[in-house]
Length: 280
Image (cartoon, rainbow, N blue to C red; front, side, top):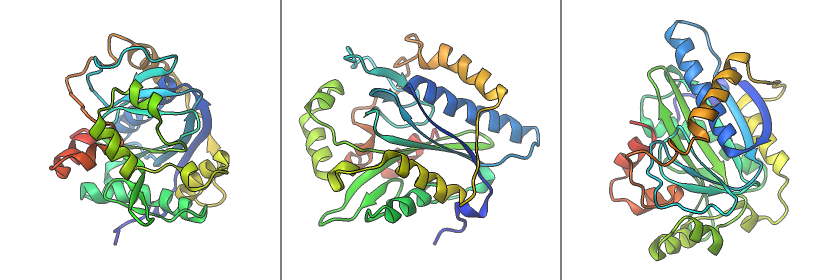
């Protein structure tokens, strides 16, 4: 049983939007940095939920991941993110959520903190007719055999925590596996263990999925806000200096062999995997 649930708190909802992946990643990073500063100086803050999509396909690396294996992106965006883990490809139809919260709001147990922040998404998916449930740090779909639908990663600062999650609409095909330089054993695990929404229901209203996710964080009557001037200024700086900067993207020290969503399925040390995905 979770000690706390997200509806115990009043959430700030940042307006849903569709922009390129580097900008979306820069905004998430800015929200985390600014909340961390605010709490450090004693300001009162609300937890933040932000749901969004990309305007075109993108390959995104985990925080400080080496990217030398990736070459021509075939017109897709190529960037990094502030949260841990490995690389992923996302289409323009995938739905992303980012929760930025004070550390004091979360359970001390790392796995339970993931589960607490994923629980509203499970409820949203169930309301939409999907047989979803919480995994350890992911969201599963119960079928004849358990499948993973949503993967997550965190980044922890001294006072604030960010959690990324993504709901895949489409399964990966040969083009994506080639783009990610996936090996045969990796492709086999993906096809065996991963599922996408369109494989369960061919008629998905993306705006309704996004709305339901937001609703189960913030409850009925929520009002969306834009970014503050401080948040825009920092996001623009991060966009230029990090998320579109080829001198930064892929120049980290962390080697990641597998696609992020199946990395935990291919490791013998899941605890170490989760800690690394959380920026610890």
